Each structure stands twice: as structure tokens, then as C-alpha cells.
Image (cartoon, rainbow, N blue to C red):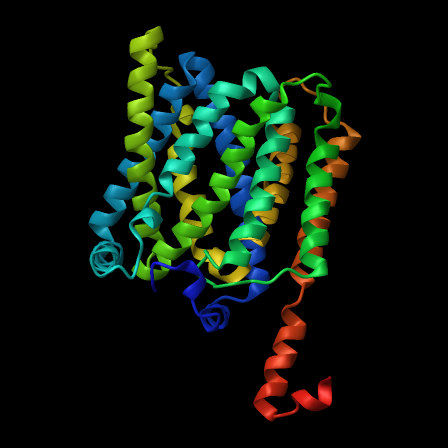
Length: 342
């Protein structure tokens, strides 16, 4: 691996696929997306209990980091992975900025505090998804992820368009007409950052040969950044008066450990764009399930259900993509039959 993400050989993608079938990776990516919806519900409740979203984010990341430190103590491959990452940084097989994926998580929650209240959750979500989708396209084209370059195809573009339409449909009833467009650049940039985070965490995982190591690096960086933000916010406006007593409010970090490590595991197989689309579908499906099983008072409408189904269709379309034609071309190359296939 070099400092140039475009130099990642594409044959690594095929090697990963021999270890994990693509359809399994897609299903897992959707499940991890649903985990983010569950974490959002938990962290949102914690932020409300503390009346401080920045302290809630720092607590969530911090508890996740503690869990990962304990896991590293008992899981030797994870500790070995840390040594591999350190060696890769020293020899520049891994660029230093590739271990800063956790900053994207810090930027995401900071952006929530700065803009979500003004824009509303719906507009905030649309901007985030737009940033993730465009980031997925750009970073796949650049080869930033561990699977190397992934060219655009009609089905991948169609899947991205369908995902944007799905999230727009799902939140259509909540969209505001008069919003400060410049402020929407903050969550859009956060969406780009999340796509970048998924790509570089995948690179760290590939170098470490351990998803646990990648998650630990992500949480260590993110926790450090969020503690600084929380301290600055606390000094400026005051500290939470008391901590909520409900234990489940502190489960956000554990949930984050699962989906951050999981995304680092599957991004090489599915690519940054498809991982983003799976995340959108998973978040909508998870949020829908939570609204049905643990309602908060907001009625589930047709748009929410329709948007969720459309997002799942977007994943299906993007998954079909160019891979089967590419595999066929690879097979023809192996047989020397390319000239007959054209």
C-alpha cells in the first residue's frame, strides 16, 4: 500500500470476495446502516437527558473506546494489528491522514449541533445523504478505498439517484421550504466526510488485518476530538447538571463499535458508494422498525415506507452493476477469448 490511494491494486478486491461473498457483504452493510439508526435514537435520548449533544457524543465515543480497549486486551490479533499499522505509518505504506477517520465522526456530531436545529432533521438528513452518495462516487473513482478504483456504470449511477430520491421521499412531509442554503453545506460536507471515513477505515483494516484495530483507531481519534469540543462547549455555556440513570442511554458507544468495525470489514468488498447506499437503506429500514416497535408519537406514513422500499431497490440496482460483466471479461481474458467477445 502506498500513500496514493489510486495505487491500490484492483486484484485485492477479488481476493476479498473469495473470503466473503458479495451478497453477504451487502446484507451486512444494510444491517450496519440499521445500527446507525439505533445509535441515533440512543444518542438522541442521551443528548436530551443531558441537554448537551456535545457531551452526549463525547460519552458515546468514549464508552466505545473503553469497550475497544478491553477487547484489544483479550484479542491478540487486534494488538498485532496495531503494530502493523504503526509499521505501515513508519514506512509510509499507510499515509498518516488515513488514520484520522474518527475526525469525521466528530465533525458529524458537531455539524448536528450547529445546523440540525435550524435546518430540521429532514433537511439535515437529505444533505448528509447527498454528501455520502457523491463522496462514495468520487472516492470509488479515485480508488481511496481498500478495493481500488471502481468505475462508474449506469446501474451504479441509477442506484445513487434512487437512493437520493428515496431519502427525499421518506422525509418529504418534514421538508421545509425556506432554509438557509449556505448552512446546508455543513451537513453536506459531513456526508462527504463520512464516506471518506468509511474508505480510510477500510484501508486501516486492510493494513492491520483486523477490523477491531480499525475501529479502535477510529474511536481513539474521534474521542480525542469530541472531548476537546465538549470541553470548549462546557466552558462556554455550562456543564450538564446530572447524568441520566437509564443504562440503555449509554449503549451508543457499543453500537458504534459494531458498525464502525463492520463497515471497515465490508468496504473492500462492496466499495464506498455501495456501502453508502446500503447505509441509507439500513438507516431508513432501522428507523422504520424503531418507529413501529418503539413509537415516539410520530405516525408512520406512506412516504416513510415507500422511501425505505425505494432505498432497498437502489441497493439492489447498484449491486447488479458492472461486476458480472467484468467477471465475464476476466474469464474471457483468461481463455484468450476477448477478441471474440467484442
